[in-house]
Image (cartoon, rainbow, N blue to C red; front, side, top):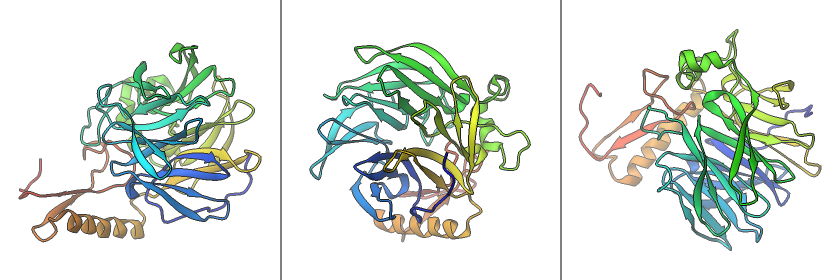
Length: 337
């Protein structure tokens, strides 16, 4: 178990999808629209820009990197400095795509939000398989926000975190890479919370100091003893859980934890991706300054624009981390809808 917390890199906007590859941690930054790598000394390197926001990362056997492009439902391929389309997923889902796991043979499994950033109507959704050649198909459905995903070392089982259901769900991986034999691997919250309070909205209202913390899986990773480390943004922690639901270790984080990945020389260094809340004054200022820069870049700064921050359920918030919407290009009215 990790015993010391060390700040590896800071001043990121929102890091996601961490992976250990070629002796470095690699990750996406949603709001810098780019993929980065960082070594053990904290040396940061930008790898490639992804205009429609990057998320899940993985590699093909030949070393080409696969990158989920969130907002246009595409899987991109980065090879020898060239970014190209590996697979278009938009005919299978119209929702915002997210995390991904890629097996040793180059087969990718990709989840999605079950909604878009502009729609508060969250639906059960699917898990998509993409072959090494780029052929995409749905291999599982009726999932409540399929998020962080792992594959066991023998390649026979896939485990996916269902964020809005607060559980880890396992599947057998068939020889043709389809999935079967769905089971609950670990339930992290009482199921009555999901059914009675419509968990997908309730989660956003659980404060850090709640006497009834509700753990949910965001990013996950698998250790050598088949325990799963889970980043739980609602409870400000990363914890290790075993099949059946026994929690063995807990690491509290000062900010919301959204993803985690084991790496390092012995595979025992846990990388944790966190993000600030709206209480961070520096971040709030940076968001506004960045929005002004975007407005200028898009050509509507002089005419005027509107900044919107949706807060909690009644405010229309569907993504539970801090962000601004920059609206422009037309005349606004008041009050808004």
